Amino acid sequence: MIDYQTLTFEYTRCSEQSPDAAACVRPVVVVGAGPVGLATAIDIAQHGLPVVLVDDDCTLSTGSRAICFSKRSLDIFDRLGCGERMVEKGVSWNVGKVFRKDELVYTFNLLPESGHHRPAFINLQQYYVEGFLLERAQALPNLEIRWKSKVTGIAQRGTPGAEDAHVALEIETPDGQYELLARYAVAADGSRSPVRKLMGLDSHGRTFKDRFLIADVKMEADFPTERWFWFDPPFHPNQSVLLHRQPDNVWRIDFQLGWDADPVLEKTPERVIPRVRALLGPDVKFELEWVSIYTFSCLRMDSFRHGNVLFAGDSAHLVSPFGARGANSGFQDGENLAWKLAMVLEQRASDALLDTYASEREYAADENIRNSTRSTDFITPKSAVSRVFRDAVLTLAREHAFARQLVNSGRLSVPAVLHESTLNTADEETFSGQMVPGASCADAPLVDAQGAPQWLLAQLGGRFAGLLFCRAGFALESDTRAALDALARGPVPMHFVAVLDGEGAAPEGLPPGTAVVRDAEGLAAQRYGAQDGAFYLIRPDQHVCARWRRADAPRVERALKRALCVAGTA
Image (cartoon, rainbow, N blue to C red; front, side, top):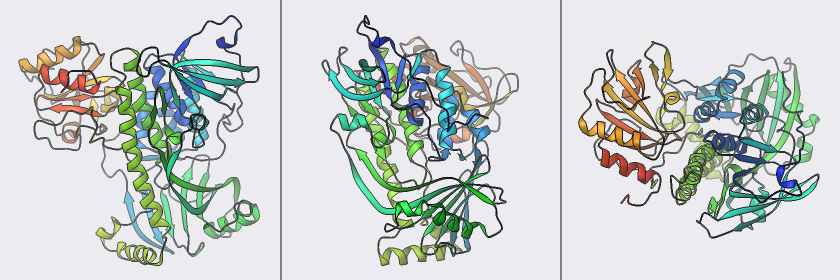
């Protein structure tokens, strides 16, 4: 088994460092080879663009760090080509338990319904996530990774929004400095973002005065594979504790310490081991694998776009760890940005499309910060009144379902529904179901023509997709045929999926190459509120753009133009 924590990567000279190198403007440079930078670079490369990824280090992360990866992130990893590895190595879980003192308050299930390819969450140490992403990145011929390449200067040149606009990055290497030019630069260089500092930008928000201890503990234990959270446990009174299982018999334990705790003293084995033993009991054998003290903030930049520099992940926004919203929202940044960069650079969309990256992900960041702040305030009450309220809620939650809705031990990450996106086309007809314009697509089990099991999200892929629901043998109306034909012949590469209800032949008039599948359990139609002839226009990041009970060419063409910020879509 590869030890990803000890891997190092060689620095090599690049073409820009040759004395006779001609000036070359790269389409995209991504700064930062952490999980978000790697995922974003892979996504861009899979859209066919050459990508350069630079990092000032030559190693992957150590310690567990981010460990909870949501179903939405797993869906993204599937599209990036490494989802199966993540799930095979990770510890899958759907169930969580909340305790007060030594009593169970209630149990919850994050994925109570069947018919999804991926679990609600997996736990997986960040170094595995980075390692699997890196191996995928190394397999892509149009993705170049440059280690020990530190950004020490940045300037924007050309007319903003024009084709001559680009970014000039000063890169420091063991062989000296060179200039790296890019049409667009993506700053995914973490919470202390050097790019952000070089540009004189800042983040704003709230810093919480509390400290938490992370202990990665290797042990054989009979705890179930669940998320356990304690309020005021007897083994750690007046504070909170969180327990997660990870691969390799490693358990992650978070102990709340309080603001007055000495961060240096609390990291020593003499302080950590008694805390762990108080939780596990005197007879459990364990080893400390990694220890860290953290404080946290909820911050974001005012804007995620500054000219031809776009910020993603922790460089753009920061949340508390409660709810696993940091890395998971960063992956959603990357998938939102990658297809938009591809469309702009391929001249299929206007540069204004990148403004919607900023507006959509700023909206999502605000939602994550709001939920993260509420979690933190509930876990660590800031006044006597807040403490009384919290304790009353926990008491009521043992027997009353309404109170369980008020308990907040870290509302876990879900993708934002982009209700206000300017790329959406509003419904003109009544639909049931949750797949409103702006929502990320739900999965559902399907079968193909040979009877082999398939999944809906895998059929959609990473391009614009047209999703048609109908009965087998359904006669497509002329307006629908015209709409499909217009999309198939249009300037944007499209993929079509026809989901049939029942046995029989596929409708005539489907575009060549349409994937014809059957709704194995009726869940696809149920989740999409679909009837015969219902048609969905899906973005490459698998968010719904528009939907119709019956599609026609003019409406579909207007919706696609709107989704690309092309003129004439009023």
